[in-house]
Each structure stands twice: as structure tokens, then as C-alpha cells.
Amino acid sequence: MTASHATDLQSQCDQLRSLHRPGAPLLLPNAWDVATARAVVAAGFPVVATTSAGVAATLGYEDQEGAPAGEMLAAAARIARGVEVPVTVDAEGGYGMQPGELVAALRSAGAAGCNLEDTDHTAGGLRDPDRHAEWLRAVRQAASADGYRLVINARVDVFLGPFLDGAGPGTQEGLVPEALRRANAYLEAGADCVYPILLWETDALRRFIAEVNGPVNVARLPQASLAELAAAGVARVSWGTFLHMDALARFAEQLAALQK
Image (spheres, rainbow, N blue to C red):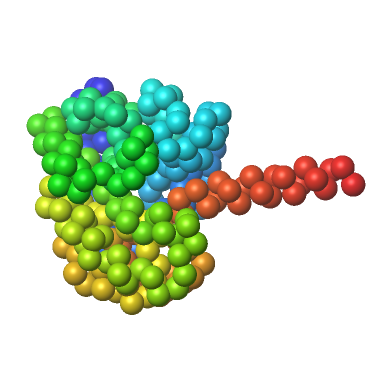
């Protein structure tokens, strides 16, 4: 990376970090290739975020680290080269890389930020929060040692499994203490933002935001409007894989219509 490119990346890291404002959330419609990333920028959004599910599907793989790290990071690098705004990369669980290796790969890809989740897809459960916090601390230390002001968004997956299993309304409140324990440990370890993915119930979300020690990212779900999320103090809103899923559904509808 040339000196000018390194300076530009550091500026993008700083810009991305500055946009995490509770009550005036950064909106991140997630892209999965250069074309969709450019569409995000053309629509006026100041940052591009990738969706690992969408990128993996575009490459012909399943999500949840089913795609080779090299291919996923190469796709992220193409996106970063294709736009002139900060790009934050969904790096899943870090692809089994050591912290220094992961940081070097993200910097080489031109990532201003990254998502790092606490699900262990190999074991099929959540990682031990203390060990995961120490891993995040090592990622932060590796970035700092390299003078790389990487924005780390630590995903907290406590609500994910129950949501996907069909947990009913009123069940998220009981999960908030564990989510807070993880989130505050990750922030203390050096994360810039935490992402309790699929936390949406109003009381649970408000409690989480009130007791967490940093900015909060949430997924854009139909249960809450953007105005409601802003009023709750959310700092960042992601669409995750939803736009990719919607695009594929619309494409399937168009293909079906061609046969009538």
C-alpha cells in the first residue's frame, strides 16, 4: 500500500468512526458486489457495508464462513477499489485467522471497518465471551501497532438463535443481561461499536442501549421504524442480507413473468 493510499484509508477510518452518532444513525444498506456498492453511493449513502451472505452467494458459496477467506476478502477489495467512500467489511468470525493476519488482510483490502461476530460456526454455538474479548483485544492491538485506525463493530449473537428458532414476543428481555455482558467486554477490549443482531423488542432494545458503554448497531427489521430506532439512541442501522434476498426474489418474479 502506497503512502497516499494509507493516508486515504486512515481518513476513511476516521470518517466512518465519526458517523456513529446515537440518535442520528448511520444507515448501511449492505452491498454484495461493486455494482451494488456503487448504487449505494449513487443513492447518497456515505459508507458502503458488505453483506457476507450476499458476497458468498455471489461467489457460489453458503454464508457462515463457507467461502474461502481469500475469495471473500478479494471481493471486499474490489468493492473498496470501486467506490470512493469508506467500506466496512463483514468479516464474519475472522475466517480462523490470527489477529495480525486478519488485520493485514483487511488493511490490504482497503477496509475502513469490519464486523466480527461471536458465533463459532464450527462448534455450532456462541464463543466464550472472555476468550472472544481477548481475541478482539488482540485484533485492536495488531491494528494499533500498524497505525491502522480500523473501526471494529463487534457483533453480539445472543438474540440470533432464538429469533431464527421462532421465539415469540416478550422473550428478548431475558437475554439482555448476557448480551450486555458480552457487549461491554467487547467494547472494553477495543471494539468501537456493538451489534446485537436481531434485537428489536422496544423495551429490551432501550435497556440494552441505556446500559451498554458504546454505540449500538441494529438490524433494520420491519418491527421498528427508522424514527423509532433513532429515538431509542441507535447509532448505526444495517440491512444485512435483506436487500440481497429481496433482489433475488424480484429477479425470480421477473423470470417467472417471462414465461407467461
